[in-house]
Image: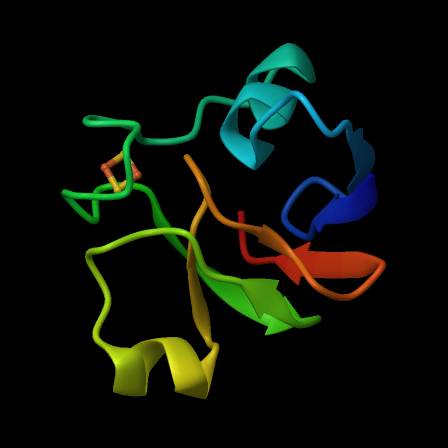
Length: 87
Ligand code: FES
């Protein structure tokens, strides 16, 4: 489990081990842009304000993943206890 702060609304959400960040945002009434939901298309890429990403997508290059300033919220998770996202 880890915490996601949706910075635009200030919502603080707990992402359970069996839910994606996108699913958790939807349950909280937010409407993230999604398409493939498998880490392939890049539609769901969201800017990371702070926190360390556990990248699970195949869309970003290794270099982009290393930079860590975008996250595919349909499948990627957090290495840190908290992620602050620009959503
Ligand atoms: Fe396609 Fe996330 S919805 S990469």
